[in-house]
Image 1 (tube, rainbow, N blue to C red):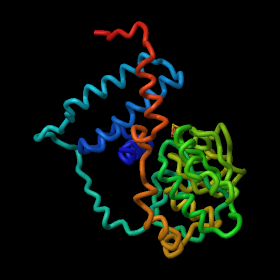
Image 2: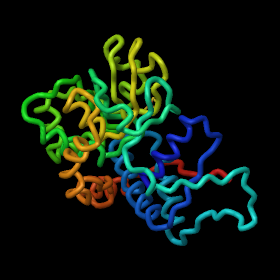
Image 3: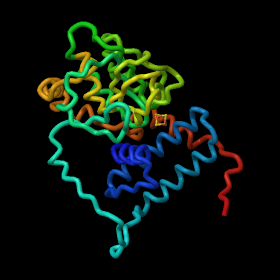
Image 4: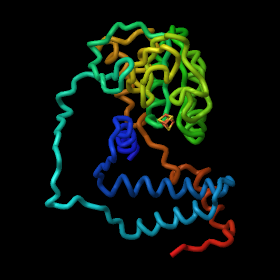
Length: 283
Ligand code: SF4
């Protein structure tokens, strides 16, 4: 579900008018169950508007009783069908400075010196930060780049602190920023003038992350390896760092399922007892 969100998010960056991803029911059911707990946790934490949040939780509970998905019409006509065989993609891909459509394989840009790295934005999920920390654990001493880390939500940050991931960032000398858009928006913090950057954010338009900056867009894993080396790695170097990540993948790429975390479950139960005045469905 998170990956579908990231892919559809990225389609907006490519100026798509819309994006629909066909999933099985199972990941949606898993996501809804987690989200219902999160919404009720938000109510218990005083987020507004409680009535809207509760209505949304109830609507999801209703859907879960008989999960039905929209299906494409069997006789639908498409303007164009583009098939991409992922088996043909043998290297990580990067969007090169400063155009999100200028995509090149790693080997075409390996060795490029990197000054700063940003891991964050709405295109990342909690697994990406765990993966980055597994890369950074392999670095002896400090890193030669300025590394900015900003998870998309406070909940991600809290969980990453609990798991000790933040202490790995601290040891490596990374700057952990307030959760949210952070450098992606370019108005909370900026990279240095004319620096060369690897970023996991959504766009690398000129001057967005910093004045005159040259920005590569890449995965969190590749961004973390680049921060460790101070340059874009070769394929061999990249795979070397990724060995640990691959062997621990099940543990690293776990989503934040709020319905399985005790503190969120307890708070969500408490929220059910909070009287919601004037909850009325609008016909
Ligand atoms: S500015 Fe914020 S919402 Fe917009 S693409 Fe960047 S992280 Fe996502």
